[in-house]
Image 1 (spheres, rainbow, N blue to C red):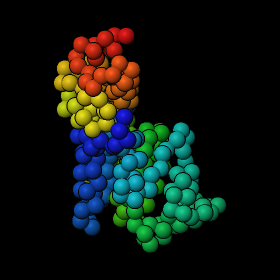
Image 2 (cartoon, rainbow, N blue to C red):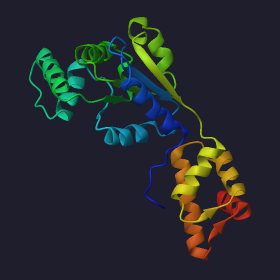
Image 3 (cartoon, helix red, strand yellow):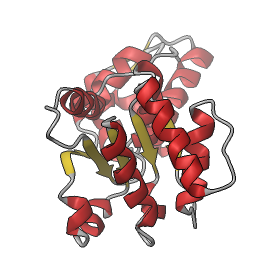
Image 4 (cartoon, helix red, strand yellow):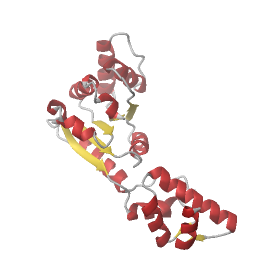
Length: 228
């Protein structure tokens, strides 16, 4: 399998959100939300784009407090977190003013039970003006809407959608070492619902092709593999 990151429809949507946030006028907030069902590649995309855009990537965890979140941000900013929360906040503000970077916070669903951490992110944005992107699950938008003082600050939203046939065709063409016919791609589309399942299916096709000296996986061979 070719080691390539495929720019699918969802990835391009995430990139477009980043560009829109970066180009907002000074008087418009630069907070974005990316959300969608599990398995669609949100985290993989967030990590990839954090490298491409030299962004700060932080993954929220269960019971994460504002101080804990700030400590993680400070470490990513090459700061040694101080003891008091206010001091760590100032460290982050000063570092971001000195070297502005996009902040991507993944798994924000963990922060939706106690909104203090999200309010800290909002305050950090207000002090620095750096774009902040929140990445969450399918219900993240609905839960945020309950807190209008936070939701109203979000200026860009993108929802990761289910993989379409064209997405899977593109993935197969760009990463597979063996040719996969249109009929076989349709079978993948009908069976695989997550990115991991798509990649695992392509990997299975490649192994069968290699073992049997095949250069192409057609619909009939694909059906046998998927039923195997």
